[in-house]
Length: 107
Image (cartoon, rainbow, N blue to C red; front, side, top):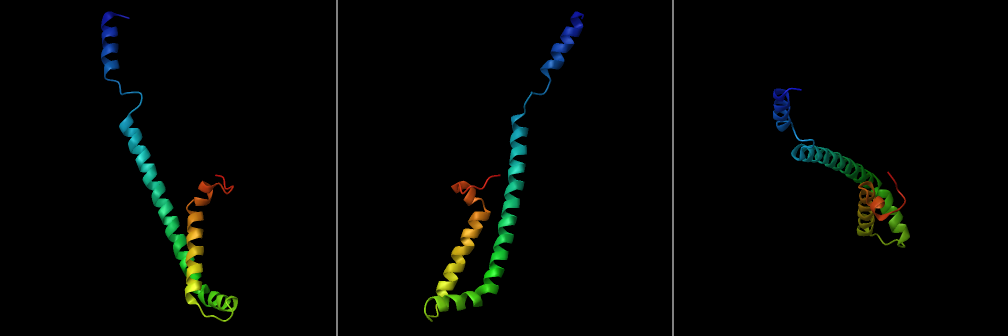
């Protein structure tokens, strides 16, 4: 190589992009995190709608079962409380809470 070639090589090497661009890496990570969060919110919303529809459709049956279980005491509050607790437990499980608690669910 001639001296001019080595000078040109050094000049071009000084303008080379870095091996790793932190701003690009962060931008890509942010974009994938936003897409993942949007999918999770969509799934959670659909599960909530499905749970609400099931609760609405099953309310008469659950009211009858609760009335018989409490000895004829008509308690719609008991039914609604049990539906709310069951819905929240289902949503928590769908959102990955069971995995965080270590109930044996694995990816």
